[in-house]
Length: 169
Image (cartoon, rainbow, N blue to C red):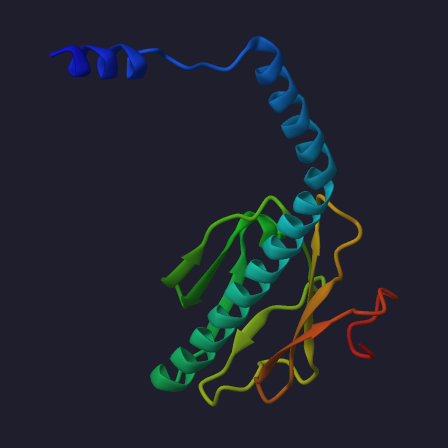
């Protein structure tokens, strides 16, 4: 009984941090967060552009395959004239797929040129189509381009030199 009482009193004391220890820990955490936040913000901006590029690439492949399968023209139509507002894949008036808006990515597309695949899987225009994607939040993010050849094959190019030209890398 005495042994049990001694153990109980020894282990029943509660341990806690002092206010000074808590303030030091919070201060160190705040300093580490302040140092890491800019790098994290840039990484998130890069990922937004990459994700939007790969989503659009996948939708291009879907539109092309649907055009071949249906032997009909499949159009990728931007909402409100801007792909950043979202876009629809459609055959005539039938919408095959819709993509939601992307506020963190800016799209630059040829003005007045429709992005459409014919029943043979080729673009309905005679020249290549280039769509440029950039970050709206960070200017240091490399531009990505989706280049669709007249044969209808999409490819992703990255402006690594950041000279505004995706074709030369």
